[in-house]
Each structure stands twice: as C-alpha cells, then as structure tokens.
Length: 184
Image (tube, rainbow, N blue to C red; front, side, top):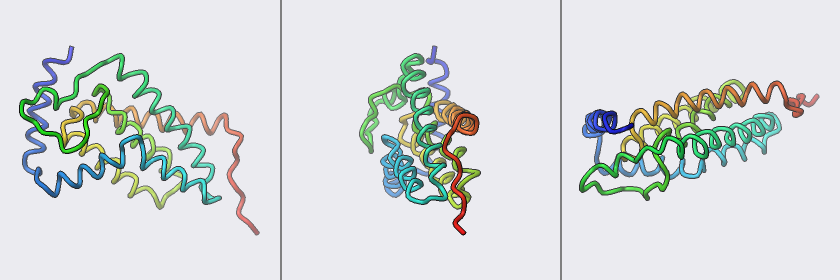
C-alpha cells in the first residue's frame, strides 16, 4: 500500500533536510525529539496549568485532549495502518536519537502537539507562540531524523487539530469544571 508513496516522500525529505543538516541541527532536533517523547513537554505544561487557578480548567481540558489524541493516533491508527519508518529504508543511515518501536503513520507526537495548540489557543493566550513553535519544531524534527514521512507529519497535524477541536467541544458540552471567578 505504501511503496510508491514511500519513495516519492523520501526524495522530498532528502530535498528538505539536506540543506539544513549538520551538527547544530542534529543537536536541536534531538532536543525537540526528547521533549516530544512520551509527550513529556505537553504533560509538564499541563501540570503547570493546574498550579495556576486561572488555567486549571485548561489543565483538565488538555489532560482529556491528550488522552483522546494518543488513543486515536497511537493506539488505534498506527497498528491498523502499519507504515514502516523511513529510516528503515535508508541504507547506511545512522540514527542520532533512539529508535522508535512503533509504526510511522500518523505521527502521534505531532498529533498530540497540534491538539495541544488547539486546546490552549483560546484560553492561554501567552502560550500561543511558544506552543505553536514547539509543535512546529517537533514536526520538523520527525522529518529531519527520518522517523516519519512528510505525509505522516501532515496527517498528524490535521488529526491533532481535529482531536484538539473535538476535546474542546466535548469539554464545553459535558464538563462540570467551571471557570474560576476572579477574586474580589
């Protein structure tokens, strides 16, 4: 199912990565892969949201949204679609970061990242640019190290936006957690 698309995407990825690769980019991309692994950065941000009364409701939302995004992308879609990782098709490629043990499509880390962008966009305006920047750099890092194909990342973005939107709608409709009122 994936063979024709894999070759085309590897060419596109080589074209995107070759002008920017080097020691600094290896280090930078490894850092963003580390942040995204296990959804570490998103879980930490969610914990910090719980500490501030103004954003506690958003902390509950992001907790639920992360669960939805991981369930849909990692537990359901990856095993069904079973796409091989791009670096496995490259001869002599040396990894700069520990190898993922799951399938490639869709990128679950990108899904989670963009779900987080959508979930925090309206309620935590001060996080808009940092969260979008981290999500974008996580996406680039997945392509840079050939952990995901370009279409895996694009699918992750769209799936993440959907999961974030869905979590917000569910939360608005069914939540019992009301926004905190400002103290007088």
